[in-house]
Amino acid sequence: MAPADLPRDLLPREGKRIPHDPASVRRILVCQLNQLGDVLLATPSLEILARAYPRAEIHLFTEKKCLPLLEGNPHVHTVWALDKAALPTLLHELAFYRRIGACRFDLLVNFQHLPRCRWVTAFSGAKIRLAPETSWYNRWLYTCLVRQKPAYAAAFKAQILAPLGIAWQGERPGIYLAEQERAEARRLLAGFGLRGVFADKPDLRLITVDATHRHPTRQWPGEYYAALLDAAADLLPDLRFLLPWGPGEEAHVLSIQAACARPERVIIPGTLLSLRHMAACMEHAVLHLGNCSAPRHMAVALGVPSLTILGATSTAWTFPSPEHTQTRARDFLNMPCQHCNRNSCPHALRCLTRLTPDLVLPVLLKHLETHCRRNDFSPEDLSRSRMPPP
Image 1 (cartoon, rainbow, N blue to C red):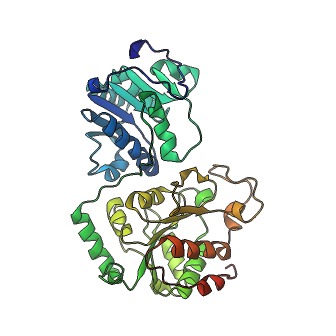
Image 2 (cartoon, one colour; image 1 turned 135 degrees about the horizontal axis):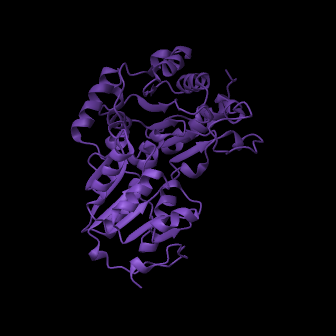
């Protein structure tokens, strides 16, 4: 049966494949909009597709804000960047989608059932169109729908590729930095007084801290971060903490620094760092600590161990490897509502407020001891790790 004749509501069972000739696939379109983290978690699928279809051009339909994460990616031929400000009317949008569809794709992979992705799918001309299982009114757009199983977020996305006979094999998200960007990061860190983190014999250890989030259900309290950083640095004086910030977030990270007893150990960039400069600085860290947002996936891409403090989100966003872990109130307390995946909370954010710094500190120290470079502190440090909440 030819791909165009496949039943539109096909939900392939394990091992079920779409009959097609990989050599005939010359252009592939992948649709992934929304957040930076979502796009990063789609990069393993881009790598899998590039390996399975080495002759094909891989195009990505995404949002303009995600472009920095895709620079230098060897698996992407063309990025179709959606700039909503430049498309003020539906007619402007339709013209843009028709321009994408004019490439005449052989294969389309849509990770999201969003209106803009549906328009691009309709214009794509692809004979094979894959997407997650969806409502009846979307099914006409696709030749194959896939019922996904719970898994790590990047593996979950890659399940859409199963009908092609390809699967996630542990591929990490990808960020591809240039040497010029790495050199600029070294200059930035030296300017912050952190030359010791990349010296031939480092005498400092850098931890990057992502203490911000646009949703309160995913942001650990700032005063808790201040207490945790103070306690960790008192036990391990060689630690330094870099707190990058995004638009509108500078006041929050400055308040964390001001609440620290030793604020000189906490570095706040005086200007907004680009995503790529932040990533290049993160390469010199022994650990990334923070809320559940894009920087944790950047750490995975850069090979930097991570510890994420979870609120409303689940553990499915954690890369399945021991150097990447999370802590949450549910690990210590009766917390049946965690994880709820909500952006608002009827319970006064108790999954975050009850996860006090004295609970997180031993987890942080143990993770540093087990998975981070220069493991030079003793079991006595761990035995002294209990502390009162702020």
